[in-house]
Length: 283
Image (tube, rainbow, N blue to C red; front, side, top):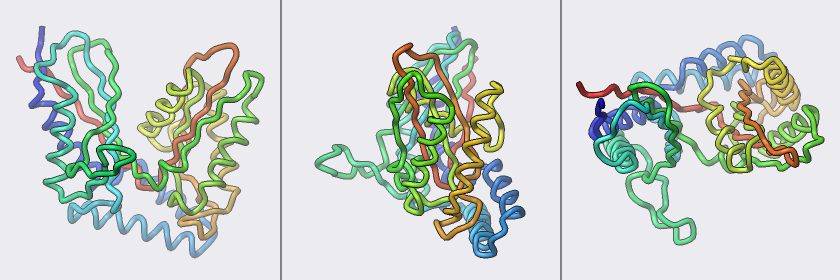
């Protein structure tokens, strides 16, 4: 059986964390440019231009895109035909720690949610893993700032609720978030499963390319309708008005129980910071 080592995992996570902090995703950059061209408000256009300039400077000088360098959320897909030498959780956190020290990035994680003592290296990360076919280990890191994370919501709807009710809940969540979550947003939405599964799907949906619709026609239709309704709120960039309240909406769904309809929305500011890497086995 082929082997992947903890050393490889840590090195991959380190590089992904650094790149995600310094390099705004290309799909987000394209979405900002596209919306700047469509935006009718001169003030909104100016602020979108500032966001693009900020991203350009961050990339050129290897500076953090945002001062909130986030809590690191890691999705690990483990090929069933490989063996892991070492502890995955320890390796991931070692990579996060090295990246945040090396990049002089803000350490924002506290070891106890009530005592609030900083861990000093931005660990531990939140780690989700799944077993998949193949001989590779795929790692996705998502840096989640809490200005937007704090505005995320979970709704446990009746099973009779339909697409219109889901849309109303999501639009209300965005309205409630307002300027405090640093718009323009990207919305990750999870529908189905249990309450915890819906929340995880909403977070994972943020890894999807902005502007790429779901393969399911009815889900793609709902994504489009939610984006249109959200952009009618006139919150705009930085909450100062304009049609660009959100850059994109992505929905992931999962089967659920006949008696319920869990719906979660994970709100992310324009600084949608994630990177994906693959660790191949040692021969």
